[in-house]
Amino acid sequence: MALFLFCKTPTGAFRMTRLQLLLCCFLLSLIIYFFHVRKAVVGVKSAHPLFHALEVDRGRIMTDMSVVKAAEPQTPEETPWGAPLVWGDTRNSAWRRAKFAERGIRIGLLALVVGTYARFIRRFLSSAETHFLPGQMVTYYILTDNPRSLDPPIELGPERQMKVVTVAELPGWDRLAQRRMTLLAEAFRDPIGSEVEYIFCADVDQEFVAPVGEEILGDLVATLHPELYGMPRNSFPYEIEEVSSACVEEDEGDYYYTSEFYGGLVSEMFSLAHACSLLILQDQANGVTARGLEESYLNRYLIDHRPTCVLSPEYSWWDSALAANVEAQRLISLGRQCEVYDKQQRELHKC
Image: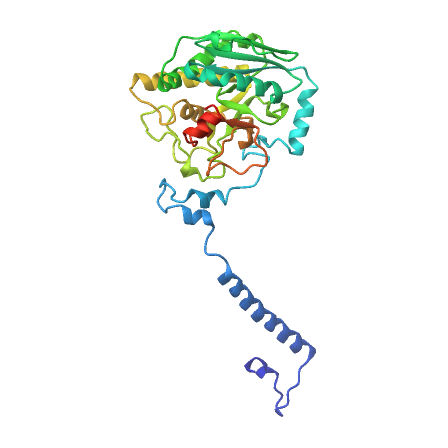
């Protein structure tokens, strides 16, 4: 009991004053605390699963994406720059719906329907009639190289209308991707700019499966890519070639957005489409093609002009081992889903 040597009296008997007793208790507490903390530190797991999945070198590809998905964040309702991050069933979304429902808003939903994609148009429109902004005034803008694919006309509900804009035939996915932003910019300028306040662009090979309401409205709206939500920054497929106008530097970018569904005020969408079309034309002139086609340019633009509203993966989802775990799916990509089906499943789902 070396600790108590200072307590011995000259006669050898142990005697403690009240102050000495308090000092001894204090020292014992420190010793117990030290051993407790040391044991706790030793017992902590060596590292977060995320760091096991990542290589040490910057930019290396992850080898076990499923481990990373287990570490994805919950459901934050705000981005780092203060924009709402929308989940359909939250109290904040209910407030946004109530706020916009008080106004009479004119909204457009645009789909580019060319070539074999015409087979998706009826399912897309029928599902939008049920789930896309019910109760609001909606105009469907269909940009197509084959207006006959819409015969016979689809029956629409009250305050719903459809306008067909004929575009030149665009064979091949690459050519379509290179021309899409130019076509959108032209359509936003005329006729869309004078007819609606908000416009949303959606790939036609999608289906609305749950309500998509006024919570999605904002000046500039982007949707999180479902397979990259919660992933670390170095897994995002940004364009990395410096010769491309879509190039993203290593210290840039907050999220990776999908090109399957995005929108906002018509004026904002015109600025987006016009800027992206110029970047694409610039790369074409230099013989450059971005790795993600128009999605690369969209992400470049949204880094420079952060969205005022970001939609969660509920608003762009498909069944995938990497897809984010969400409580509700509201807009599903049939095209992406069909990619994982075998031949029999494709026939069953009419892919």
